[in-house]
Image 1 (cartoon, rainbow, N blue to C red):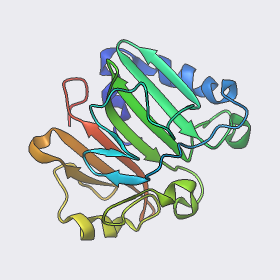
Image 2 (image 1 turned 60 degrees about the vertical axis):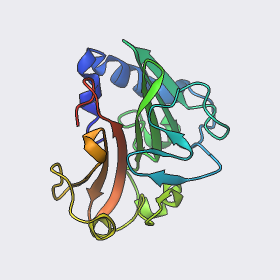
Image 3 (image 1 turned 90 degrees about the horizontal axis):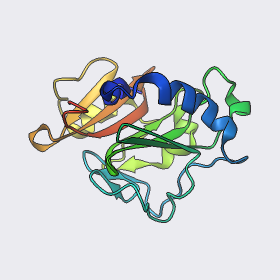
Image 4 (image 1 turned 180 degrees about the vertical axis):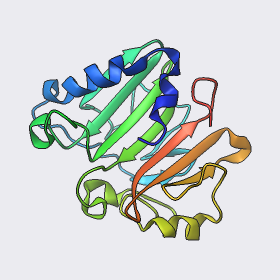
Length: 194
């Protein structure tokens, strides 16, 4: 998670993430699944799988039902979907991936993340989620700049920053060993500065 800590500035802190998500997979359905929307299109600075920034979190459209776990606190609701159980990945890193997160503030979606932190991202179930320019989990990191041009001010060797119009939104592509392993789409705000 490239920038997840910024959303926690409201004092939600590590309580929800550490306690809730660590135990969350174990307490979830016996066979957690990734979302299966009609579209797996990633639209930078807009949304993923037919769900958009600013949209109400509930009700989510078909294919986005039944997250593995949702946690709430101080106006935030963070839901995630994964195809791993805690037994699959061990208690130390229950969400090592593949995992899809949606974060909402006051029931409006402010953040998406697709992430794979173990194994080969190119062989992940999330490798089928792509932008219109064919960039997604498992793409070569250099292909992001080739598709979208010079990155924004947050670009570094490990992150490609694609700012939205007027810096109201932001999309980040994370790099692990030359491969995209993390994609975040954020609505910029006082709780989540870009």
